Length: 438
Image (cartoon, one colour):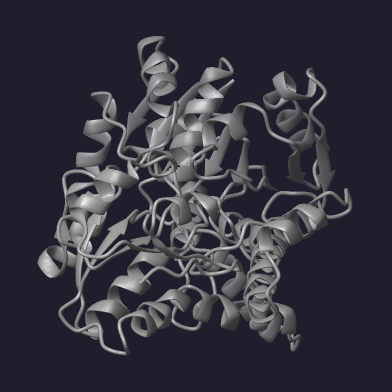
């Protein structure tokens, strides 16, 4: 099948590459000429494990194409995926201006039946709005479908090729049949395709992400309480997760959630509720707790240094909001850097993948180390902000030689407590006892 993807951001690029891998001819459209030229030349603008290999394979197989010409791509395709940004506005609501603009363009340009697929995360009722916008521009028949993505950054290729389910919101039998044909390679292997109305499909994405944000935040609250009463959150987590009604995933405590999805989607659902005179009290509490949780270790750092960290050099391992991505949107590292700098500390950071993105944002406000141990040179303490695999089994002897103080503040609970204790480090993590060593 011939398919057009409008937007070559994270979702658009992964979706387009995956659909090409399934044998479709995919035309990816973006208004950024420089970006499109780079894509044509095999340059992947985001970091995502295993994406580049699949991307290059499908370009060479002439199934994946890139253009700035929407009309050209539209004319070649029966199905048009909208993978456009829906950033939060000042009030937290999703900004649909990109989606509405492209819907306008499609209405003006289409010459035959099309299925318009909303892949972007959009508020309930967006399919109706897109339908109205296109219908105002043309009398040619078309259908609008909701098909939310459930990709985890760092595992997006795996999630795309092995989804747990495919959700499709569609009212038209013709559109349902076309979507079923696209996803037949998945349904043939037993992966369910769940058909529903468009509004339910749109809400499913917000509900899923918001629930996971609540689950993470609840576990962080439990972790903080563990510290008050002397319990160990690792033990509690294992006990809870063994209940198959709860499960083990998203029970790892840390310095809050970030990224492009959870913060934005929680805000958008809260705002959508307000517009309908409905108060999402759990989500409002989740936001408040997460904001505090992201910087919860800064007060611990201050406490260790007697209330004053001015002039202290803090090494930071990790800048991305999570491992296996270069995404720094809503990253906890940035909140901590801002607060530490405000309090007079110096930062030497290391992240092999996300550093360039932070450098574009912060410039020379912090130092950037070439390696994880270089960041530790004369550091007063180490702050671990991202759970990159290379941090899991460090050389503690070398760390001790590099650092002024053997002190670790671990926002991701990277080590069993006995490891830093055996190596003589003061070690403060989340929801577990502090290993004292001054």
